[in-house]
Image (cartoon, rainbow, N blue to C red):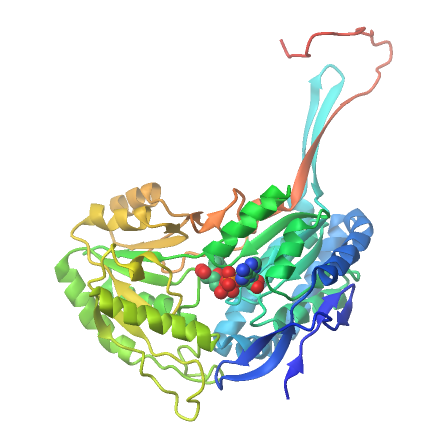
Length: 501
Ligand code: NAD
């Protein structure tokens, strides 16, 4: 039977009233397993009102008490890890171990948020002038919102609400309609952890719900992660409505492979980072750039059997390297890019299009594909594929290789493989990409650093989590205070701006 998902508003499950729904598939069987209600503007508004109501008390809590709620939440998520990982995997299609990784990476942001008393501390200058002290403090913004993609249904909501709520804001999360159950379960666990009703609300929806967020005068900031076209729309519309916006978009991450690289490690890393989670990661390696044709030939020789041997299976199969893609529509889009690559003249070394999972012929499976001789002029190079497809674009030297990620429209992540510290240092310094790995394939910064790409991979100036996450969800107030001193002389009115001269 098809289950109806609910919203979670003011600490309670609430049925959708719009009469509009999105389908949630079991990606392994292709069957619809649930329906996500798509909220109206009025339903979104009821969540904003719940968050507004919860804000005064929550923001007035001392930060140590808010941190304790985050500690409790972390313990509850860990206790429920198996249930959450199976729930995530059943809607997304990623394998169980990778689903646990998704949750764990989110929990690491919660661990960071447990340090909020320290992170919110302001600055103080004693005697900035005679008898004058200056201090600054960070204050929460109020009601803030997060709009999240399908590919990390646990990690990305936690990136956002973990920092926002610990900082004293109240939150409305609009998760992907494709895998909505985990965010709802996380909201239940936050309530159980001690966050009062209304501190974390989850409202499902599509464009109507997103527009309601972007135009609601009581939402002060919006964090978005998803595809570039929508990220840009969210940034333009949200800022036009006076909101603080961070909007992360798509990616096309390159790995530059220098002739002195440890090729065994490179092959292992390309297989993991190219095909893990069926390539549905914004930090997946999509393009490998071997420097020199000789290295290109050797790389393809070694990669080909590894791609052919990939174990594509049910997400619950512990031996699976990756499972099905999220929807039929997305699987067909990725297949379409493979067709296009062939038409454009790239060499399809391994063709995953005909893979069939026995007994699960209607599932959204796709075998791994490998392209060689991909050129920067090809559309399949310029656009994000977001599937189990690795492209090889050969370069003649370091300069040509390094220019590829720098010139690409996206600038999320990049990696270089070399033993040459000088080349790696120059690359890291000059490349026009936001996150760089040196002999590391998926350079996702840890929670206490900050995550964000450049160019069309991110709109807005302040990144996710880490110190920038705290800055995004707080505003700074600076107080200049003078207390009358005993016997102090009065200076009278001054018509000149005070200076330190
Ligand atoms: P998506 O853009 O389709 O959806 C993201 C969110 O936007 C969802 O909540 C969705 O409901 C909403 N949305 C969809 N269409 C909309 C519209 N027309 N108007 C308003 N809102 C709309 O992205 P997705 O397919 O869920 O996720 C995959 C994309 O996310 C990839 O491009 C991937 O690179 C990107 N991504 C980026 C990062 C990053 O940090 N840069 C991280 C993860 C995923």
